[in-house]
Amino acid sequence: MVEGVRCMDPTIKLILLLIFFRIACASTIEKKFEHCERVVKDWALSSLHQGINNDKHTLQDLLFFLHVPRTGGRSYYHCFLKKLYPSSQECPRSYDKLRFDPSKTKCRLLATHDDYSMMEKLPKERTSVVTIVRNPVDRVLSSYEFSVEVAARFLVHPDLASATKMSKRVRAKTNGVSTLDIWPWKYLVPWMRGDLFTRRDARRQKGSSEAKSDSPYDMEDMLMPLKEFVDDPIVQDIVHNGATFQIAGLTNNSYLAEAHEIRHCVQEHKSLGQHVLHVAKKRLDAMLYVGLTAEHKESAMMFANVVGAQVISQLKDANFSVDTLADNQSGNISSSHLDSELESNVDQNNSTLDEKATVQDESEAKRENMTVAELIEVYEGCISSLLKTQSRRRFASLKRISPANFSKEARRSISDEVLQQIRTLNHLDMELFEYAQEIFTMRHVRLMGNIDMKARPH
Image 1 (cartoon, helix red, strand yellow):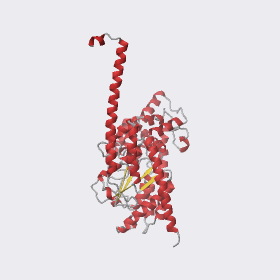
Image 2 (cartoon, rainbow, N blue to C red; image 1 turned 180 degrees about the vertical axis):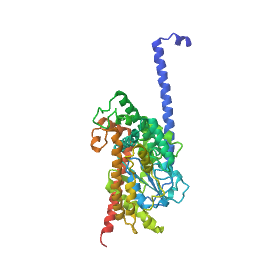
Image 3 (cartoon, rainbow, N blue to C red; image 1 turned 45 degrees about the vertical axis):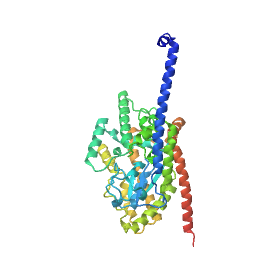
Image 4 (cartoon, rainbow, N blue to C red; image 1 turned 90 degrees about the vertical axis):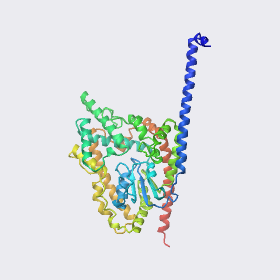
């Protein structure tokens, strides 16, 4: 037998070796898939069997605002929630405060970028969850733009080393938290910052500062092209299908030990994503409120009527003076305060506080008997100031990589190929977004019917 193999034609021998190799590879791949399938299915089954508050229409003792990045959640936090909840009722290390500290057991508001695995630390039966969902394409584009915007603030420094040293020194001196500390920006911004410095250094070596493209999404001499961003493994792990993984509790920021393995199983075996999607849909179903970024006016109105009205009722029942509802700034230092201090060290001409307009508007919320209509009025004034401040900060940041300037009009220059690539890489989020739209439409119709009934004369 051995002698026969030795005498075998070399070509036939090579073919047989290739066949054996392919069989061995197929067997290994099949075993990996079977392992992944078992891990993902076991997690999904366990997640679906966990207790979920069945009374999804009633606000419970604790409100958990699960903030999906780049969905407009900052405006809800500053212009709705901080108008409603006294600072004494906000959970320590809540919004922009790194990780939740469960030591304060009687807190009533938790607003964070943490994913749904946070529920492992909360009393599920006494917790209501709210979130906002955005069109996945718009969310990816916004993530790219924001990463560039924040990273560009450091370009005033002569080099990356001095920029990194300065940011560490300022952060060490304060009690606040920078954007660089918060998921997912603690991964995306330093990466983008390093890329911006590398490209600037290359331009200086070539003695050229002119962009070779009219589109800010394809100025490779100035900044990382959008296509390169979309295809990078960092973005594929953190941004793509980010809403689905966050609502499922499987981000790289998860409290679940098995989250990393499950997420990568789903990324490697596309069909297994349906199990994760099913869990995410069930959790959306059980939430007190699901808003849509694009439906801004309707979403804000629903939030005020569904969440705001119940918070006001709870506070009154608990004998809290509505006069103090807005007196809640002193105990919380937001990330933007530290970001602004970083900027003031970087550029003395640009030390605008992100929340300055919000703080100035706090007095507007001091009403003895706040109604839903008054809450909406306060929200509209607050968000107008907040957006103006954010717009000024963006302009100040992007002028450092001029002529790159992001806008709705500039987005039209993005190729169909890149947009389709984003849709493909976010197939789970695309389906989850459609499901969120269905939930929103159904609940909005029901709310409007209830409002009409209350408005009718008896």
